[in-house]
Image (cartoon, rainbow, N blue to C red):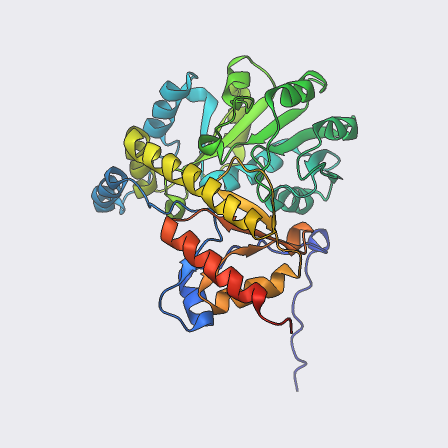
Length: 371
C-alpha cells in the first residue's frame, strides 16, 4: 500500500505572503449576486472603454497573431520617446506597469539589498520585494500619503530602490513636486526611485510633478506609466517605464523577450494618437470624481482628496461586510483590509449612471440593520 503523497511545502521565502487579489470580474460578480446587470467600480477602469481607433488597430493586428510580437516593441517605444522628449533607449515596455514593478526588483535587488516602501502603498511593491529577498523596509504613511522624509530616513547602505506611487493606489493622495525633489536630493547616488505614475494623466493639480522631467535631467528616477487606465486598455496589458539607458538595459536583461502582445502594441500606438478620447475620459472622470466625492461627504463619509480615477472612502464600519452587501446589490467596489484600512473602500469613478447606482446601493446597505 502506497503512502498518500504530501503536497509540496510553500517555499520558505514566500511564508507570510498572500497572493494579490484583484477586484471581482463582471462575470464573477454576476454569479455571486445572481443579477444580470452588474456595476463594476473596483479596478479603476475607464468607463468609456478604449478608443475606437485602438479597437480597430487591435482587430487588424489579430491577423498577425501567428507571429511572435516585436520583442522590444520598437514602434511603440519610439512613439512614446517622441511624445516624452526622451530617446527610445530610455523606454521599456511591460505587460502592464505592474510587471515592471517586479522587473525592477529582479534587476536591482541582490540577496542582501533592500527597498524602501510606504505602508498603504500599492500592494505589489511589498509583495515583489518580499518574494525577491524578503527585505522590504516599510514606512508608515502620514495623512494617508507617502511620508517621503521618513522614507528617506529609512534608506541605509543596502537600499537600492525606493518605490513611490504618485498618485498613490489605493488612497488617491499625492506628493508635491518639492517633496519628491527633496527625496531625490537626499538620496545616495546608487539608490533608484521607482516612481509609479499609473494615474498621471488624471492629475489636475499645479503642484503635482511630471516625473519624466527628472529622467530627462539625469536624476536617479524610473517612471512607470500604463495604458490600462486613461487609455482603457487594461485587458491588453501594456505599460511602460522611462529611465536612463543603463537602467532600461538592466531591466531588459530580466524582461521576458515577448512580454507585450501583437494586438496590445497596435492598440497602444493607436490610443496614443486619439487625444480626443483621452480628453473625453478626463472630462468625465474629473466631473464625476467631484460629484461623487461631494455626495459621499454629504452622507457623512470621510473621502480622501484624490488626483486619480477613484476615491478612498471610510464608511465607518467593517468595509468587508459592506463590500459583500454591495455585491449582493450588483455593485462591486474594493475593500481595503489587505492594506490595513478595515473601514475603507476604494471606489472607482464610473459613468454617471454607474455612480448613481453605487450611491443608491450604498445608502440601502448602510441603512439596513447591522447583522
